[in-house]
Image (tube, rainbow, N blue to C red; front, side, top):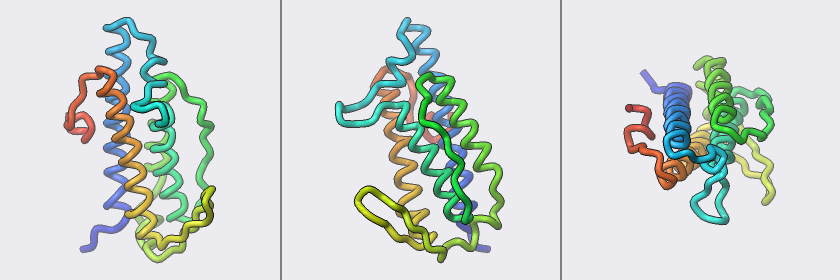
Length: 168
């Protein structure tokens, strides 16, 4: 029995997004306990030239929604990137998970050879479905989830590896 592209990815996407939502809960609790404006956390970044926490969550969400949509031959539903608060970011994560739940394995499995063309500022990038998923979607998604985790951790949110992995 083969693993399939759906089972190799969608459960992991949902686990990491769920963990990110729980880590945002911990950020909200820290803000209350330390009397910090939660917007300080959602606008925090690790370096001046990096995107803030809010954008890390938005990009992680966009990446998995766009990834699955392209593999299934669908248009990605648009989400306005206006979330600023922890609750708004958590709502975006919930919408993303609901979107992931709308896919069946049959829509994703078998897309390994589908041509995927991304129009980037630097020009077009062409992939097979398998390369797109494993060399673009997953690395970008995990990068932005990891960066969100690191921003929270750097700002004093008491989270560890188990929190990132969704095991806590």
